[in-house]
Length: 147
Image (spheres, rainbow, N blue to C red):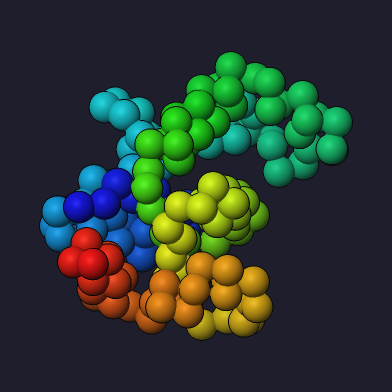
């Protein structure tokens, strides 16, 4: 079975369903919502409730805050541990950068599409790894194990 890093957005209501389905199928899955026991993931608001009003200088400085460093370390270690990265749309910049890591590291990269603007560069993942549903993701992962 695969070790999967699910890259998505906190606002994506499907993310937890994806994590549950992959675990039910027998995969090990990193969940950024719950990266460790008693840890409910990184939030910029843990550094500053006014984070959405930051100027670039404040944002850059916040990257070195202990809370940001800890959140990054959890995700980065999980990305290195995983053999597969799954991008669950819709999502933002971080998730796309995470998928880019998997492509660049020559690890398996899968995209679970959602309605929205097309993206040509998803082709880097291979068209067989562009999925339309959670069951299709599970099937693609199962097919890879069988090879």
